Image (cartoon, rainbow, N blue to C red; front, side, top):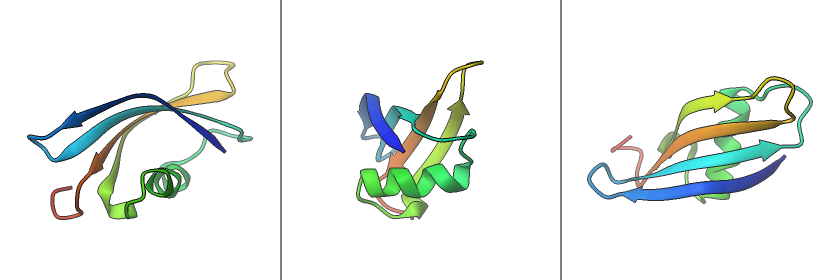
Length: 77
């Protein structure tokens, strides 16, 4: 799967990064279990630090737009 970062915003109050990504290169809409390890490897953190807010695939599109929060540690998440 190919990941492109659309926007990335730091939120120091909650100790997280708010990220919007575009993912392509899959057969069916990916599940949260498939996307979380992909994002953790992309941002070099553990799976516990990744919280997926939304996975959205427009009708007829081969791309998925993912909104996620990447926390600094698993304790904060």
